[in-house]
Image 1 (cartoon, each protein chain N blue to C red):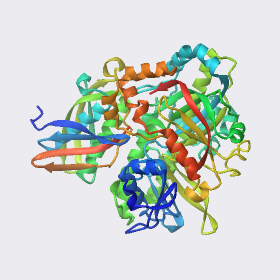
Image 2 (cartoon, rainbow over the protein chains, first blue to last red; image 1 turned 60 degrees about the vertical axis):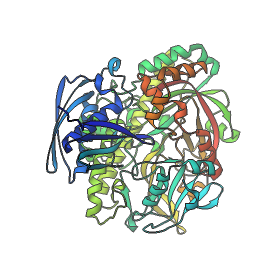
Image 3 (tube, rainbow over the protein chains, first blue to last red; image 1 turned 90 degrees about the horizontal axis):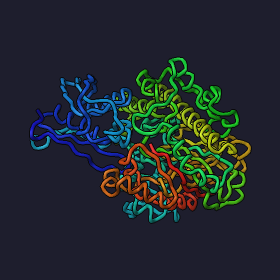
Length: 141
Length: 476
Protein backbone atom coordinates (compact mmCIF):
# COMPACT_ATOMS: atom_id res chain seq x y z
CA UNK A 1 0.00 0.00 0.00
CA UNK A 2 1.35 3.46 -0.85
CA UNK A 3 2.14 5.68 2.15
CA UNK A 4 0.33 8.95 2.79
CA UNK A 5 3.36 10.76 1.35
CA UNK A 6 3.06 8.92 -1.96
CA UNK A 7 1.99 11.06 -4.90
CA UNK A 8 3.26 12.27 -8.23
CA UNK A 9 3.07 15.40 -10.34
CA UNK A 10 4.26 16.87 -13.60
CA UNK A 11 6.21 20.08 -13.84
CA UNK A 12 6.71 22.36 -16.79
CA UNK A 13 9.71 22.31 -19.07
CA UNK A 14 9.20 24.11 -22.39
CA UNK A 15 8.77 21.48 -25.08
CA UNK A 16 9.02 18.51 -22.72
CA UNK A 17 7.58 17.42 -19.38
CA UNK A 18 9.05 16.96 -15.91
CA UNK A 19 7.99 13.86 -13.93
CA UNK A 20 8.23 13.95 -10.14
CA UNK A 21 7.43 11.27 -7.57
CA UNK A 22 7.18 11.68 -3.79
CA UNK A 23 7.35 8.91 -1.21
CA UNK A 24 8.15 8.00 2.34
CA UNK A 25 11.13 6.03 0.98
CA UNK A 26 13.38 6.34 -2.05
CA UNK A 27 11.83 3.28 -3.78
CA UNK A 28 8.36 4.70 -3.24
CA UNK A 29 9.41 8.02 -4.81
CA UNK A 30 10.73 6.04 -7.80
CA UNK A 31 7.41 4.15 -8.04
CA UNK A 32 5.50 7.43 -8.05
CA UNK A 33 7.85 8.82 -10.71
CA UNK A 34 6.92 5.74 -12.76
CA UNK A 35 3.24 6.68 -12.45
CA UNK A 36 4.06 10.25 -13.48
CA UNK A 37 5.81 8.80 -16.55
CA UNK A 38 2.69 6.83 -17.53
CA UNK A 39 0.57 9.94 -17.00
CA UNK A 40 2.56 11.77 -19.69
CA UNK A 41 1.07 9.27 -22.14
CA UNK A 42 -2.32 8.35 -20.65
CA UNK A 43 -4.38 8.43 -17.46
CA UNK A 44 -2.83 5.77 -15.16
CA UNK A 45 -6.27 5.11 -13.64
CA UNK A 46 -7.40 3.73 -17.01
CA UNK A 47 -4.51 1.24 -17.21
CA UNK A 48 -5.34 -2.17 -15.72
CA UNK A 49 -2.52 -4.05 -13.93
CA UNK A 50 -3.02 -7.27 -15.92
CA UNK A 51 0.52 -8.32 -16.73
CA UNK A 52 3.81 -8.01 -14.82
CA UNK A 53 7.14 -7.06 -16.37
CA UNK A 54 10.37 -7.24 -14.35
CA UNK A 55 13.19 -4.75 -14.93
CA UNK A 56 16.68 -4.43 -13.48
CA UNK A 57 19.24 -1.69 -13.86
CA UNK A 58 22.41 -0.30 -12.36
CA UNK A 59 24.04 3.12 -12.30
CA UNK A 60 26.94 4.75 -10.47
CA UNK A 61 24.65 7.01 -8.41
CA UNK A 62 20.98 7.18 -7.48
CA UNK A 63 20.12 10.06 -9.79
CA UNK A 64 21.46 8.20 -12.82
CA UNK A 65 19.63 5.14 -11.43
CA UNK A 66 16.32 7.01 -11.65
CA UNK A 67 17.03 7.98 -15.28
CA UNK A 68 18.06 4.39 -15.99
CA UNK A 69 14.88 3.00 -14.50
CA UNK A 70 12.60 5.41 -16.30
CA UNK A 71 14.45 4.55 -19.52
CA UNK A 72 13.94 0.84 -18.80
CA UNK A 73 10.20 1.54 -18.53
CA UNK A 74 10.26 3.57 -21.77
CA UNK A 75 11.95 0.62 -23.47
CA UNK A 76 9.44 -1.91 -22.14
CA UNK A 77 6.51 0.33 -23.12
CA UNK A 78 7.93 0.78 -26.62
CA UNK A 79 8.80 -2.83 -27.35
CA UNK A 80 5.80 -4.46 -25.65
CA UNK A 81 3.31 -1.70 -26.68
CA UNK A 82 2.26 -1.58 -23.03
CA UNK A 83 1.38 1.00 -20.39
CA UNK A 84 2.02 0.49 -16.67
CA UNK A 85 -0.01 1.57 -13.66
CA UNK A 86 1.47 -0.26 -10.65
CA UNK A 87 5.10 -0.52 -9.60
CA UNK A 88 7.18 -2.23 -6.94
CA UNK A 89 10.76 -0.96 -6.70
CA UNK A 90 13.67 -2.32 -4.62
CA UNK A 91 16.97 -0.47 -4.46
CA UNK A 92 20.09 -2.20 -3.20
CA UNK A 93 23.14 0.07 -3.39
CA UNK A 94 23.61 0.95 -7.05
CA UNK A 95 21.20 -1.71 -8.28
CA UNK A 96 17.46 -1.48 -8.82
CA UNK A 97 14.99 -4.35 -9.24
CA UNK A 98 11.45 -3.49 -10.16
CA UNK A 99 8.17 -5.06 -11.12
CA UNK A 100 5.73 -3.10 -13.27
CA UNK A 101 2.11 -4.16 -13.88
CA UNK A 102 0.11 -2.96 -16.82
CA UNK A 103 -1.54 -3.91 -20.07
CA UNK A 104 -1.30 -3.52 -23.85
CA UNK A 105 -2.12 -0.07 -25.22
CA UNK A 106 -5.83 0.16 -26.01
CA UNK A 107 -6.44 3.23 -28.17
CA UNK A 108 -10.14 3.39 -27.34
CA UNK A 109 -9.64 3.25 -23.57
CA UNK A 110 -6.26 4.91 -23.07
CA UNK A 111 -6.32 7.69 -25.70
CA UNK A 112 -2.49 7.82 -25.60
CA UNK A 113 -1.33 11.37 -26.32
CA UNK A 114 2.36 11.10 -27.01
CA UNK A 115 5.33 8.69 -26.97
CA UNK A 116 8.13 9.27 -24.48
CA UNK A 117 11.49 9.10 -26.28
CA UNK A 118 13.66 8.91 -23.17
CA UNK A 119 14.49 10.31 -19.74
CA UNK A 120 16.98 13.19 -19.79
CA UNK A 121 19.27 14.44 -17.01
CA UNK A 122 17.57 17.84 -17.02
CA UNK A 123 16.59 18.80 -13.44
CA UNK A 124 17.46 15.20 -12.50
CA UNK A 125 17.23 14.97 -8.72
CA UNK A 126 16.80 12.27 -6.08
CA UNK A 127 16.82 13.64 -2.52
CA UNK A 128 15.08 13.70 0.82
CA UNK A 129 13.30 16.97 1.61
CA UNK A 130 11.93 17.32 5.17
CA UNK A 131 11.55 13.58 5.51
CA UNK A 132 9.90 13.01 2.13
CA UNK A 133 11.81 11.48 -0.78
CA UNK A 134 11.63 13.24 -4.16
CA UNK A 135 12.64 11.63 -7.47
CA UNK A 136 12.37 13.76 -10.60
CA UNK A 137 13.64 14.40 -14.11
CA UNK A 138 12.50 15.75 -17.48
CA UNK A 139 11.42 13.26 -20.15
CA UNK A 140 11.74 13.97 -23.86
CA UNK A 141 8.49 13.62 -25.81
CA UNK B 1 15.96 36.87 -21.46
CA UNK B 2 17.59 39.89 -19.87
CA UNK B 3 19.07 41.75 -22.84
CA UNK B 4 21.45 43.64 -20.54
CA UNK B 5 23.50 40.45 -20.37
CA UNK B 6 24.23 40.55 -24.10
CA UNK B 7 25.98 42.83 -26.55
CA UNK B 8 23.92 43.69 -29.61
CA UNK B 9 26.15 43.15 -32.65
CA UNK B 10 23.39 44.09 -35.12
CA UNK B 11 19.57 44.09 -35.30
CA UNK B 12 19.44 40.28 -35.36
CA UNK B 13 22.72 39.22 -33.79
CA UNK B 14 23.41 39.14 -30.04
CA UNK B 15 26.68 38.20 -28.38
CA UNK B 16 27.36 36.73 -24.96
CA UNK B 17 30.96 37.79 -24.39
CA UNK B 18 33.46 35.10 -23.50
CA UNK B 19 33.72 34.93 -19.73
CA UNK B 20 34.58 32.44 -16.99
CA UNK B 21 35.30 28.99 -18.40
CA UNK B 22 33.92 29.85 -21.87
CA UNK B 23 36.43 29.05 -24.61
CA UNK B 24 34.54 31.10 -27.22
CA UNK B 25 31.68 33.61 -27.14
CA UNK B 26 28.04 32.60 -27.68
CA UNK B 27 25.96 34.19 -30.43
CA UNK B 28 22.15 34.21 -30.66
CA UNK B 29 20.35 35.19 -33.88
CA UNK B 30 16.90 36.65 -33.24
CA UNK B 31 14.81 39.81 -33.32
CA UNK B 32 14.55 41.90 -30.18
CA UNK B 33 10.99 40.65 -29.61
CA UNK B 34 12.06 36.99 -29.89
CA UNK B 35 15.05 37.68 -27.63
CA UNK B 36 12.86 39.18 -24.91
CA UNK B 37 10.53 36.16 -25.06
CA UNK B 38 13.40 33.65 -25.14
CA UNK B 39 13.92 31.47 -22.06
CA UNK B 40 16.91 32.50 -19.92
CA UNK B 41 17.90 28.82 -20.00
CA UNK B 42 18.98 29.35 -23.63
CA UNK B 43 21.52 31.88 -22.32
CA UNK B 44 22.79 29.40 -19.71
CA UNK B 45 22.95 26.49 -22.11
CA UNK B 46 24.64 28.46 -24.92
CA UNK B 47 27.25 29.57 -22.35
CA UNK B 48 27.75 25.98 -21.14
CA UNK B 49 28.27 24.69 -24.69
CA UNK B 50 30.91 27.41 -25.19
CA UNK B 51 32.91 25.77 -22.37
CA UNK B 52 33.33 22.42 -24.16
CA UNK B 53 36.79 21.44 -25.44
CA UNK B 54 37.65 22.04 -29.07
CA UNK B 55 34.69 24.30 -29.86
CA UNK B 56 35.35 26.54 -32.86
CA UNK B 57 34.33 30.21 -33.35
CA UNK B 58 31.26 30.35 -31.08
CA UNK B 59 28.32 28.53 -29.53
CA UNK B 60 25.34 29.54 -31.68
CA UNK B 61 21.57 29.65 -31.07
CA UNK B 62 18.95 30.03 -33.81
CA UNK B 63 15.87 32.30 -33.64
CA UNK B 64 13.65 29.41 -32.45
CA UNK B 65 16.02 28.46 -29.62
CA UNK B 66 14.51 27.15 -26.40
CA UNK B 67 15.52 25.19 -23.32
CA UNK B 68 16.80 21.74 -24.25
CA UNK B 69 18.88 19.19 -22.36
CA UNK B 70 22.55 20.15 -22.35
CA UNK B 71 22.51 22.02 -25.63
CA UNK B 72 19.61 24.39 -26.29
CA UNK B 73 17.13 23.24 -28.92
CA UNK B 74 18.13 25.46 -31.83
CA UNK B 75 21.80 25.14 -30.87
CA UNK B 76 24.72 24.85 -33.30
CA UNK B 77 28.31 24.08 -32.30
CA UNK B 78 31.30 22.83 -34.28
CA UNK B 79 34.25 20.96 -32.78
CA UNK B 80 37.75 20.36 -34.10
CA UNK B 81 39.01 16.81 -33.40
CA UNK B 82 42.63 17.99 -33.68
CA UNK B 83 42.02 20.47 -30.85
CA UNK B 84 40.55 17.89 -28.46
CA UNK B 85 37.05 18.51 -29.77
CA UNK B 86 34.13 16.48 -28.45
CA UNK B 87 31.00 14.82 -29.76
CA UNK B 88 27.89 15.03 -27.57
CA UNK B 89 24.80 12.82 -27.55
CA UNK B 90 22.89 15.70 -25.92
CA UNK B 91 24.12 17.96 -28.73
CA UNK B 92 22.24 15.81 -31.23
CA UNK B 93 19.21 14.87 -29.16
CA UNK B 94 17.13 11.72 -28.66
CA UNK B 95 15.36 11.91 -32.00
CA UNK B 96 18.46 11.54 -34.13
CA UNK B 97 18.02 12.91 -37.66
CA UNK B 98 14.49 14.06 -37.03
CA UNK B 99 13.73 16.08 -40.13
CA UNK B 100 11.36 17.27 -42.79
CA UNK B 101 10.86 16.22 -46.38
CA UNK B 102 8.75 17.95 -48.97
CA UNK B 103 7.16 16.36 -52.04
CA UNK B 104 5.72 18.12 -55.06
CA UNK B 105 2.36 16.86 -56.34
CA UNK B 106 1.71 18.84 -59.54
CA UNK B 107 -1.79 19.48 -58.17
CA UNK B 108 -3.65 22.62 -57.16
CA UNK B 109 -6.12 23.45 -54.39
CA UNK B 110 -9.20 22.54 -56.42
CA UNK B 111 -7.83 19.06 -57.10
CA UNK B 112 -7.52 18.48 -53.36
CA UNK B 113 -10.77 20.08 -52.24
CA UNK B 114 -12.78 17.68 -54.44
CA UNK B 115 -11.33 14.67 -52.61
CA UNK B 116 -10.15 16.26 -49.37
CA UNK B 117 -12.07 14.03 -46.93
CA UNK B 118 -11.36 10.83 -48.87
CA UNK B 119 -7.65 11.70 -49.18
CA UNK B 120 -7.40 12.54 -45.46
CA UNK B 121 -9.09 9.28 -44.49
CA UNK B 122 -6.95 7.19 -46.79
CA UNK B 123 -3.69 8.83 -45.65
CA UNK B 124 -4.72 8.30 -42.04
CA UNK B 125 -5.59 4.67 -42.77
CA UNK B 126 -2.36 3.90 -44.66
CA UNK B 127 0.25 5.84 -42.66
CA UNK B 128 0.72 4.36 -39.16
CA UNK B 129 0.68 7.20 -36.64
CA UNK B 130 0.52 7.60 -32.87
CA UNK B 131 1.53 5.76 -29.72
CA UNK B 132 1.83 2.00 -30.15
CA UNK B 133 1.30 2.08 -33.92
CA UNK B 134 3.28 -0.42 -35.98
CA UNK B 135 4.30 -0.65 -39.61
CA UNK B 136 3.86 -3.63 -41.89
CA UNK B 137 7.60 -4.04 -42.54
CA UNK B 138 9.53 -6.49 -40.37
CA UNK B 139 13.28 -6.63 -40.82
CA UNK B 140 15.41 -9.59 -39.80
CA UNK B 141 18.82 -8.97 -38.21
CA UNK B 142 20.65 -8.88 -41.54
CA UNK B 143 18.08 -6.60 -43.18
CA UNK B 144 18.15 -4.28 -40.16
CA UNK B 145 21.92 -3.87 -40.52
CA UNK B 146 21.58 -3.27 -44.25
CA UNK B 147 18.97 -0.57 -43.57
CA UNK B 148 21.22 1.06 -40.95
CA UNK B 149 24.10 1.15 -43.42
CA UNK B 150 22.07 2.08 -46.48
CA UNK B 151 19.47 4.67 -45.40
CA UNK B 152 17.10 5.96 -48.09
CA UNK B 153 19.31 4.30 -50.74
CA UNK B 154 18.51 0.93 -49.15
CA UNK B 155 14.80 1.79 -49.15
CA UNK B 156 14.88 2.75 -52.83
CA UNK B 157 16.73 -0.47 -53.68
CA UNK B 158 13.95 -2.35 -51.88
CA UNK B 159 11.37 -0.63 -54.08
CA UNK B 160 10.18 2.15 -51.78
CA UNK B 161 10.99 5.00 -54.14
CA UNK B 162 12.96 5.86 -57.24
CA UNK B 163 16.65 6.59 -57.78
CA UNK B 164 15.86 10.27 -58.54
CA UNK B 165 14.70 10.68 -54.93
CA UNK B 166 18.20 10.13 -53.59
CA UNK B 167 19.88 13.22 -55.01
CA UNK B 168 17.24 15.30 -53.19
CA UNK B 169 18.14 13.88 -49.77
CA UNK B 170 21.07 15.14 -47.68
CA UNK B 171 24.07 12.81 -48.04
CA UNK B 172 22.46 11.48 -51.25
CA UNK B 173 20.21 9.38 -49.05
CA UNK B 174 22.98 7.39 -47.37
CA UNK B 175 25.04 8.57 -44.41
CA UNK B 176 28.56 7.25 -44.85
CA UNK B 177 30.60 5.56 -42.09
CA UNK B 178 27.55 4.21 -40.27
CA UNK B 179 28.40 1.24 -38.08
CA UNK B 180 25.32 -0.92 -37.48
CA UNK B 181 27.46 -3.11 -35.20
CA UNK B 182 27.65 -0.16 -32.77
CA UNK B 183 23.86 -0.14 -32.42
CA UNK B 184 22.67 -2.18 -29.44
CA UNK B 185 20.28 -5.09 -29.78
CA UNK B 186 17.83 -3.10 -27.60
CA UNK B 187 17.83 -0.21 -30.09
CA UNK B 188 17.28 -2.63 -32.97
CA UNK B 189 14.47 -4.37 -31.07
CA UNK B 190 12.80 -1.03 -30.43
CA UNK B 191 12.82 -0.43 -34.19
CA UNK B 192 11.62 -3.90 -35.15
CA UNK B 193 8.03 -2.91 -35.99
CA UNK B 194 8.45 0.86 -36.31
CA UNK B 195 9.74 1.13 -39.90
CA UNK B 196 7.36 3.28 -41.91
CA UNK B 197 5.67 4.84 -38.88
CA UNK B 198 5.19 8.55 -38.27
CA UNK B 199 5.50 8.64 -34.47
CA UNK B 200 3.66 11.08 -32.22
CA UNK B 201 4.06 14.48 -30.57
CA UNK B 202 5.00 17.17 -33.06
CA UNK B 203 5.49 14.71 -35.92
CA UNK B 204 3.07 15.01 -38.80
CA UNK B 205 2.25 14.46 -42.42
CA UNK B 206 0.55 17.37 -44.15
CA UNK B 207 -0.94 18.14 -47.53
CA UNK B 208 -0.24 21.84 -47.96
CA UNK B 209 -0.90 24.68 -50.36
CA UNK B 210 1.73 27.25 -51.35
CA UNK B 211 0.01 30.45 -50.18
CA UNK B 212 2.84 32.95 -50.65
CA UNK B 213 6.02 33.18 -52.68
CA UNK B 214 8.68 35.60 -51.45
CA UNK B 215 11.47 34.89 -53.92
CA UNK B 216 10.13 34.03 -57.38
CA UNK B 217 13.53 33.18 -58.81
CA UNK B 218 14.53 30.65 -56.15
CA UNK B 219 10.96 29.31 -55.97
CA UNK B 220 11.15 28.60 -59.71
CA UNK B 221 14.39 26.64 -59.22
CA UNK B 222 12.70 24.70 -56.39
CA UNK B 223 9.68 24.10 -58.66
CA UNK B 224 7.25 26.02 -56.43
CA UNK B 225 4.60 28.57 -57.35
CA UNK B 226 1.59 30.05 -55.61
CA UNK B 227 -1.33 27.61 -55.42
CA UNK B 228 0.82 24.47 -55.76
CA UNK B 229 0.07 21.54 -53.49
CA UNK B 230 2.94 19.86 -51.66
CA UNK B 231 3.22 17.13 -49.04
CA UNK B 232 5.44 17.59 -45.99
CA UNK B 233 6.53 14.77 -43.69
CA UNK B 234 8.08 15.52 -40.28
CA UNK B 235 9.53 12.58 -38.35
CA UNK B 236 12.80 10.96 -37.34
CA UNK B 237 14.63 7.77 -36.47
CA UNK B 238 11.83 6.46 -34.25
CA UNK B 239 12.61 4.09 -31.37
CA UNK B 240 16.06 3.17 -32.64
CA UNK B 241 17.35 6.74 -32.47
CA UNK B 242 15.70 7.32 -29.09
CA UNK B 243 17.41 4.25 -27.64
CA UNK B 244 20.85 5.19 -29.04
CA UNK B 245 20.45 8.69 -27.57
CA UNK B 246 19.49 7.21 -24.20
CA UNK B 247 22.36 4.72 -24.07
CA UNK B 248 25.09 7.14 -25.13
CA UNK B 249 23.87 9.91 -22.84
CA UNK B 250 24.75 7.58 -19.96
CA UNK B 251 27.99 6.27 -21.48
CA UNK B 252 29.18 9.80 -22.19
CA UNK B 253 28.21 11.09 -18.75
CA UNK B 254 30.59 8.50 -17.33
CA UNK B 255 33.22 8.82 -20.11
CA UNK B 256 33.56 12.59 -19.85
CA UNK B 257 35.09 12.38 -16.38
CA UNK B 258 37.37 9.52 -17.46
CA UNK B 259 38.72 11.71 -20.27
CA UNK B 260 39.26 14.66 -17.99
CA UNK B 261 36.44 16.69 -19.54
CA UNK B 262 34.90 18.92 -16.88
CA UNK B 263 31.21 19.33 -17.57
CA UNK B 264 29.45 22.48 -16.36
CA UNK B 265 26.28 20.40 -16.43
CA UNK B 266 25.95 16.59 -16.47
CA UNK B 267 23.48 16.66 -19.35
CA UNK B 268 26.25 18.05 -21.60
CA UNK B 269 27.56 14.48 -21.58
CA UNK B 270 30.20 14.18 -24.28
CA UNK B 271 33.39 12.37 -25.22
CA UNK B 272 36.44 13.33 -27.27
CA UNK B 273 35.77 12.72 -30.97
CA UNK B 274 38.91 10.61 -31.19
CA UNK B 275 38.05 8.46 -28.13
CA UNK B 276 36.52 4.98 -28.31
CA UNK B 277 33.20 6.18 -26.90
CA UNK B 278 33.16 9.13 -29.30
CA UNK B 279 33.81 6.86 -32.28
CA UNK B 280 31.26 4.29 -31.06
CA UNK B 281 28.64 7.02 -30.83
CA UNK B 282 29.42 8.43 -34.27
CA UNK B 283 29.02 4.97 -35.86
CA UNK B 284 25.72 4.38 -34.04
CA UNK B 285 24.42 7.93 -34.60
CA UNK B 286 25.15 7.71 -38.34
CA UNK B 287 23.23 4.42 -38.41
CA UNK B 288 20.29 6.25 -36.80
CA UNK B 289 20.55 8.96 -39.48
CA UNK B 290 20.17 6.21 -42.07
CA UNK B 291 17.20 4.82 -40.14
CA UNK B 292 15.48 8.21 -40.29
CA UNK B 293 16.24 8.62 -44.00
CA UNK B 294 14.90 5.11 -44.71
CA UNK B 295 11.81 5.78 -42.60
CA UNK B 296 10.95 9.02 -44.41
CA UNK B 297 11.55 7.23 -47.72
CA UNK B 298 9.13 4.43 -46.79
CA UNK B 299 6.53 7.00 -45.65
CA UNK B 300 7.00 8.73 -49.00
CA UNK B 301 6.17 5.48 -50.76
CA UNK B 302 3.00 5.07 -48.64
CA UNK B 303 1.92 8.62 -49.54
CA UNK B 304 2.58 8.05 -53.24
CA UNK B 305 0.45 4.89 -53.18
CA UNK B 306 -2.46 6.78 -51.61
CA UNK B 307 -2.24 9.58 -54.17
CA UNK B 308 -2.02 7.03 -57.00
CA UNK B 309 -5.28 5.56 -55.76
CA UNK B 310 -7.22 8.79 -55.34
CA UNK B 311 -5.49 11.27 -57.66
CA UNK B 312 -3.84 9.09 -60.33
CA UNK B 313 -2.73 12.13 -62.33
CA UNK B 314 -0.43 13.23 -59.49
CA UNK B 315 3.33 12.69 -59.58
CA UNK B 316 5.15 13.19 -56.30
CA UNK B 317 8.84 13.91 -56.93
CA UNK B 318 10.92 14.93 -53.96
CA UNK B 319 11.75 18.61 -53.49
CA UNK B 320 14.19 17.95 -50.64
CA UNK B 321 14.77 16.14 -47.33
CA UNK B 322 16.54 17.85 -44.40
CA UNK B 323 17.54 16.55 -40.98
CA UNK B 324 17.62 18.89 -38.00
CA UNK B 325 19.13 16.73 -35.19
CA UNK B 326 22.58 15.62 -36.34
CA UNK B 327 26.33 15.78 -35.96
CA UNK B 328 28.09 15.81 -39.33
CA UNK B 329 31.66 16.20 -40.52
CA UNK B 330 31.82 19.23 -42.78
CA UNK B 331 34.55 21.42 -44.21
CA UNK B 332 34.39 24.98 -42.91
CA UNK B 333 36.69 27.97 -43.11
CA UNK B 334 38.71 28.47 -39.93
CA UNK B 335 41.57 30.98 -39.67
CA UNK B 336 41.75 31.35 -43.44
CA UNK B 337 41.94 27.61 -44.19
CA UNK B 338 39.42 24.80 -44.62
CA UNK B 339 39.11 22.36 -41.74
CA UNK B 340 37.04 19.23 -41.07
CA UNK B 341 34.70 20.07 -38.20
CA UNK B 342 32.07 18.01 -36.36
CA UNK B 343 29.04 20.27 -36.60
CA UNK B 344 26.28 19.59 -34.06
CA UNK B 345 22.86 20.88 -35.05
CA UNK B 346 20.18 20.21 -32.45
CA UNK B 347 16.91 21.60 -33.66
CA UNK B 348 18.77 23.44 -36.41
CA UNK B 349 18.83 22.85 -40.17
CA UNK B 350 21.88 22.63 -42.40
CA UNK B 351 21.62 25.56 -44.84
CA UNK B 352 24.39 25.44 -47.46
CA UNK B 353 24.55 28.50 -49.67
CA UNK B 354 24.44 28.71 -53.48
CA UNK B 355 27.20 26.82 -55.24
CA UNK B 356 27.93 24.37 -52.42
CA UNK B 357 29.02 21.05 -53.96
CA UNK B 358 26.77 19.00 -51.62
CA UNK B 359 23.62 20.60 -53.06
CA UNK B 360 22.16 18.65 -56.01
CA UNK B 361 23.20 20.25 -59.28
CA UNK B 362 19.63 21.14 -60.28
CA UNK B 363 19.24 23.26 -57.12
CA UNK B 364 22.84 24.37 -56.58
CA UNK B 365 22.52 27.88 -57.98
CA UNK B 366 19.67 28.68 -55.58
CA UNK B 367 21.13 27.31 -52.34
CA UNK B 368 20.01 24.33 -50.28
CA UNK B 369 16.27 24.10 -49.60
CA UNK B 370 15.63 24.63 -45.88
CA UNK B 371 12.29 23.20 -44.72
CA UNK B 372 10.78 24.75 -41.61
CA UNK B 373 7.82 23.01 -40.01
CA UNK B 374 5.26 25.15 -38.27
CA UNK B 375 2.49 24.09 -35.93
CA UNK B 376 -0.64 22.31 -37.12
CA UNK B 377 -2.87 24.83 -38.78
CA UNK B 378 -0.48 27.77 -38.92
CA UNK B 379 1.76 27.03 -41.86
CA UNK B 380 5.32 26.06 -42.68
CA UNK B 381 8.06 27.64 -44.77
CA UNK B 382 10.56 26.82 -47.48
CA UNK B 383 13.79 28.81 -47.28
CA UNK B 384 17.10 28.65 -49.13
CA UNK B 385 20.61 28.61 -47.71
CA UNK B 386 22.70 31.76 -48.16
CA UNK B 387 26.40 32.38 -48.82
CA UNK B 388 26.76 34.43 -45.62
CA UNK B 389 25.33 31.67 -43.40
CA UNK B 390 28.72 29.92 -43.62
CA UNK B 391 30.38 32.77 -41.70
CA UNK B 392 27.37 33.34 -39.43
CA UNK B 393 26.75 29.83 -38.07
CA UNK B 394 28.55 27.16 -40.13
CA UNK B 395 25.70 27.28 -42.68
CA UNK B 396 22.80 26.67 -40.31
CA UNK B 397 19.27 27.99 -39.87
CA UNK B 398 16.26 27.49 -37.61
CA UNK B 399 14.06 24.36 -37.69
CA UNK B 400 10.56 25.26 -36.55
CA UNK B 401 8.36 27.38 -34.39
CA UNK B 402 9.25 26.07 -30.94
CA UNK B 403 6.67 25.70 -28.20
CA UNK B 404 5.23 28.78 -26.54
CA UNK B 405 3.27 26.77 -23.98
CA UNK B 406 3.88 23.49 -22.15
CA UNK B 407 1.85 20.41 -23.07
CA UNK B 408 0.04 20.61 -19.76
CA UNK B 409 -0.92 24.20 -20.20
CA UNK B 410 -2.13 23.43 -23.74
CA UNK B 411 -4.22 20.52 -22.46
CA UNK B 412 -5.80 22.77 -19.84
CA UNK B 413 -6.48 25.47 -22.42
CA UNK B 414 -8.00 23.47 -25.28
CA UNK B 415 -10.00 20.35 -25.96
CA UNK B 416 -8.88 18.24 -28.92
CA UNK B 417 -12.38 18.17 -30.43
CA UNK B 418 -12.63 21.95 -30.31
CA UNK B 419 -9.24 22.29 -32.09
CA UNK B 420 -10.35 19.83 -34.80
CA UNK B 421 -13.65 21.70 -35.31
CA UNK B 422 -12.00 25.13 -35.36
CA UNK B 423 -9.50 24.00 -37.99
CA UNK B 424 -12.25 22.27 -40.03
CA UNK B 425 -14.08 25.61 -40.20
CA UNK B 426 -10.88 27.02 -41.74
CA UNK B 427 -10.82 24.17 -44.27
CA UNK B 428 -8.09 22.13 -42.56
CA UNK B 429 -8.84 18.45 -41.87
CA UNK B 430 -6.99 16.92 -38.90
CA UNK B 431 -6.74 13.16 -38.40
CA UNK B 432 -5.20 11.73 -35.24
CA UNK B 433 -5.72 8.75 -32.94
CA UNK B 434 -5.54 11.03 -29.89
CA UNK B 435 -7.73 14.03 -29.05
CA UNK B 436 -5.47 14.74 -26.09
CA UNK B 437 -2.50 14.72 -28.48
CA UNK B 438 -4.28 17.27 -30.68
CA UNK B 439 -4.96 19.54 -27.68
CA UNK B 440 -1.29 19.35 -26.69
CA UNK B 441 -0.30 20.28 -30.25
CA UNK B 442 -2.86 23.08 -30.69
CA UNK B 443 -1.63 25.79 -33.10
CA UNK B 444 -1.46 28.48 -30.43
CA UNK B 445 0.68 26.29 -28.16
CA UNK B 446 3.53 27.16 -30.53
CA UNK B 447 5.40 30.38 -31.14
CA UNK B 448 4.70 32.35 -34.27
CA UNK B 449 6.69 30.49 -36.93
CA UNK B 450 6.54 33.57 -39.20
CA UNK B 451 8.45 35.64 -36.63
CA UNK B 452 11.12 32.92 -36.38
CA UNK B 453 11.47 32.65 -40.16
CA UNK B 454 11.53 36.44 -40.60
CA UNK B 455 14.36 36.63 -38.08
CA UNK B 456 16.32 33.85 -39.85
CA UNK B 457 15.85 35.72 -43.14
CA UNK B 458 16.78 39.12 -41.70
CA UNK B 459 19.82 37.68 -39.92
CA UNK B 460 21.01 36.22 -43.23
CA UNK B 461 20.94 32.60 -42.03
CA UNK B 462 18.58 31.56 -44.85
CA UNK B 463 16.40 33.32 -47.42
CA UNK B 464 12.60 33.14 -47.28
CA UNK B 465 11.22 31.48 -50.44
CA UNK B 466 7.63 30.34 -49.87
CA UNK B 467 4.96 29.83 -47.25
CA UNK B 468 2.74 26.75 -47.23
CA UNK B 469 -0.47 26.15 -45.28
CA UNK B 470 -2.11 22.81 -44.50
CA UNK B 471 -5.31 21.41 -45.99
CA UNK B 472 -4.87 17.99 -44.40
CA UNK B 473 -2.85 17.10 -41.32
CA UNK B 474 -2.16 13.56 -40.09
CA UNK B 475 -0.93 13.76 -36.50
CA UNK B 476 0.62 10.98 -34.48
